[in-house]
Amino acid sequence: MATAKKAAAKKKPAAKKPAAKKAAVKKVAAKKPAAKKVAAKKPAAKKVAAKKPAAKKVAKKAVAKKAVAKKAPAKKAAAKKPKTARKPNAAFMKPMTPSAVLAAVVGSNPLPRTDVTKKVWDYIKKHKLQDAVNKRNINADDKLKAVFGGKKTVSMFEMTKLISGHLK
Image (cartoon, rainbow, N blue to C red):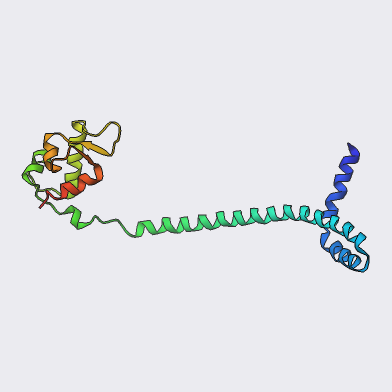
């Protein structure tokens, strides 16, 4: 085992000096016949093995630099948040009068679109009208069927479109 460790120790320093040997090997290979060129290929294989650890080090440095670069913009974004407070869109907050059919579900008082949608969802959850298998679908009862234009099943995305037709 001691000889194996010594052999491994000797190989490591040899791997650090491939550039100097490369130039000398090329000169020798050019002057000598083809039989010597085979011997020149063996050191080239060692060079490839020696370059792989260096490539890994470069890759690790690149990853470290990317990680540092990602952290810096996150701090800038955090600094920007306190400057502007989010304001609600006035169109959504404008009170609208529901039709008589929709008033049976949400009430007859003028409400913003957001509140109308919330009240319709409260009604759906209270009466357990959401489809058990596909949660995106709503199974309409008699009141909602009138709002949905006679449709028995409506997707939640289609529901908002149908409700907006009942607001003035």
